[in-house]
Image (cartoon, rainbow, N blue to C red; front, side, top):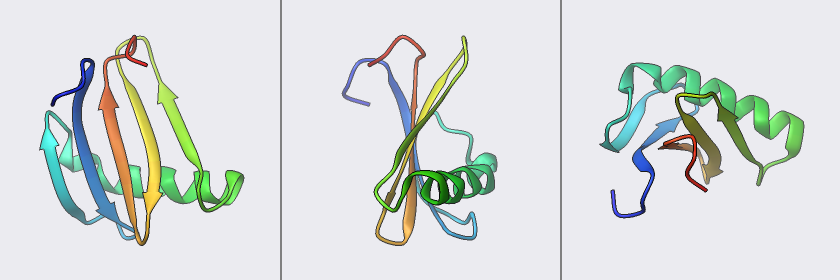
Length: 78
């Protein structure tokens, strides 16, 4: 990945099917990404950007047309 701190990206459909991935991403978590994305849309609206962060990792979730995109990052990355 070209931006410092970015570990990978995962793109999934609304059913949790992995459409594309790059870098070090847990493809087995595609269903979780789809569910979190759906919940963030319900809470924040269609163009929501949600962040889930722990001391070990950070995931930024958003939607693009009919797909959910998860950006996996190191926790200190902006």
